[in-house]
Amino acid sequence: QSALTQPASVSGSPGQSITISCTGTSSDVGGYNYVSWYQQHPGKAPKLMIYDVSNRPSGVSNRFSGSKSGNTASLTISGLQAEDEADYYCSSYTSSSTLVFGTGTKVTVL
Amino acid sequence: EVQLVQSGAEVKKPGESLRISCKGSGYSFTSYWISWVRQMPGKGLEWMGRIDPSDSYTNYSPSFQGHVTISADKSISTAYLQWSSLKASDTAMYYCARRYCTNGVCYAFFDYWGQGTLVTVSS
Image (cartoon, rainbow over all chains, first blue to last red; front, side, top):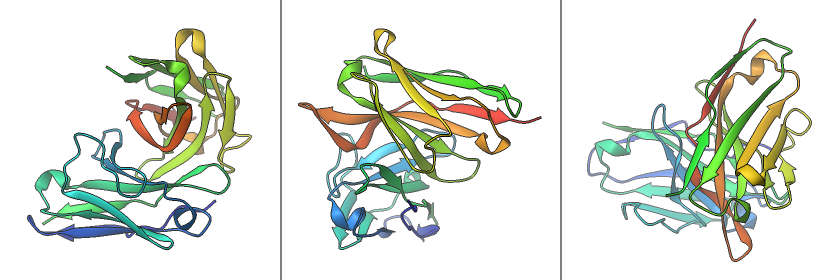
């Protein structure tokens, strides 16, 4: 069970939009609409940002959006803000009835 | 208010046993699955496995099957992660997380997380 592939880092200036990709296989990302995204600030527990590919929990800014095409899911942060600087992880359900996380992406606000 | 409160940091020697805990409150403990997630120093999140507290059914990641044991005591709303013989490579932060469930169906995401338990294994 390999981790989903994410870019190690993505950066953008305040106000810009950035997109983080999450690539898996047909046995996980491509096979189910069960991709979620988590934000983790240093020293803190992860926080749910997106679930079931594109749904936002209450309280999460609408600047965060998710999508999926084939075996790749994406998280887009629009109107980038300093507080968005954090690590982001995708997660997917798998055909083995397990869950798998992505490798993680460090977002830097320039 | 939903809370998952984990036990405190541990420092152990290789070969020792350990059990860490995760106490749920503010919700029906048996209605939601609990997962454990490992984060090694400076590394990413790894799903270890989960338990259904209502019947203690467990499901493990192949990477952790046989190396750890997940259990729960529903009478005290507490889930556990235990090792029989720790290794230095078990040094990590361990999080418990509640898997969202509704109407008897559990979904593939975590809506609440514990604060984490740091386990350090060193001789």
